[in-house]
Image (cartoon, rainbow, N blue to C red):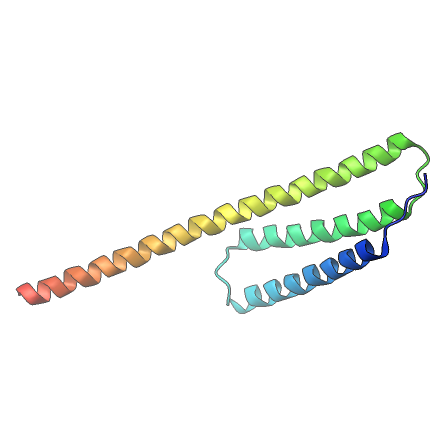
Length: 127
């Protein structure tokens, strides 16, 4: 069976690849400047996600243009590609949990600072 990637799908994938590359470059520049609050582990995870996403896009192009010798080989290829997609989703959810945890820590620090300011103001009023 001859399969081809449609023109709109190919254009969408190319635009997505460019967006991923631009986002990765921006993330690397922010991290190197120190203008980002993410940890080294989060940074490496995000780089891994971008590499995996770009690999998936490239493999989609390859898989749609390649003439498969049999259906089993094709099934194994597309199944492996789907597993890569699940890995990207897992990494994204892990990154989200790390960001959410960091937000809670920062919010707690802010509340402690506010409480300390209130306590200091009350001591000045009393003393």
